[in-house]
Amino acid sequence: MESIERYVHAVTHLLPQSQREDIAKELRGLIEDMLDERVQDGNATKKDVEEVLLELGEPRKLANKYRGTNRYLIGPELFDHYIMVLKIVLIATSAVIGVSFIIEIIMDPPSILQAFISFIVSVVTGLPMAFAWTTFAFASLQFWGNKQLKVVDLQLNSDWKPSDLPPIPHPKGQVKKGEAITGIVFYIICITFFVFSSDYFGIWVFDDGKFKEVVHFFNEQYIGYCMLFIFLIFGFGIIKECLKLVHGRWTMQLVLFTAVVNIFSIIGLMIVIAEPLIWNPNFITQLVESGLLAVDSESFQTLSVIWEQATKWLLIIFLFTLIWDIIDGYIRVRKSK
Image (tube, rainbow, N blue to C red; front, side, top):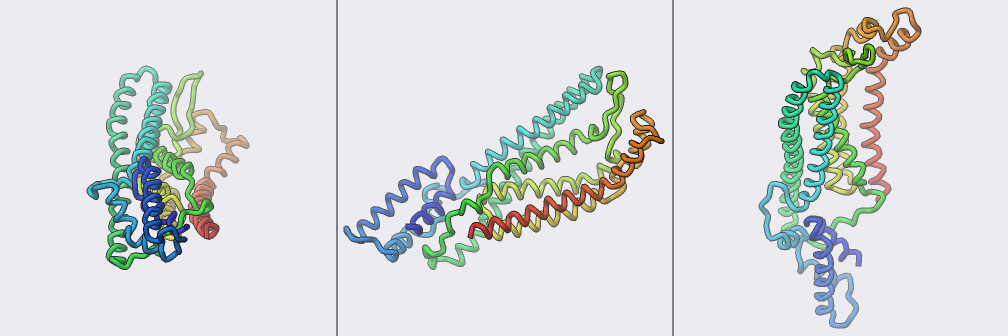
């Protein structure tokens, strides 16, 4: 019966991935034995199934019995996701730091010792920071999730009944694991890049095949003041993708949370990108001075227009992406019903 499968899913979803299959089989067998004992060779009715599930108790309490403990910073229901995301975050952070080290050596070979020292410092500071932020994100999910569940437990108390079981996720409403992981990697790369590699973000100028300089897109004197907003924008994005990965399916609550996070991200983007001081005010002039652009050329006029319109189009692209994220979630919720 559907209620049995919903009950098994509700219990096993709260357990570590490695235990779910075995416990699901054990739980189905237990329910079957209890039904056989109750009906004694008869056909089990919906009422019989409901009484058996009531006897087994609320799914979260039964899951706690299988786990045998309730003390943890990150619980078993989140731990597998936490380890997976932590590996992804550490690999992505290491990759960005490594690429930055290689780029620095290519740009200035004589300073290889200084580049190596910077690489060591980046590793020592970057990897612990990535570990800390990932752990903080999942600990927050664990804390607020448990807090909400405690409220639910108080409301249900002994009045829990099988009809309270959540439905098994519909395929159309499920969050694809690959999408959430891609989002996490994207945000991690962005944070790591701005922290350790923003000096290389611009037009690279070479002279006779040798690196000469970088004409920066950003204003080097102002970008540091925007780091807080950049951290918040991408940090909230990581938490949002982690929540999608953990939750596994789109619900109206997840859509609402996504909307709130994206609204804050939009406000942050407008503060950062729309602020004229963040962009290099001498970008076009420096291109001319470096010999890459001639003042009277058609390229000069074209690039000047593109540079002036870049802020507007970046905002449009980001706004569309964040708004579509909310709309897509809502559509999936509707399709799954």
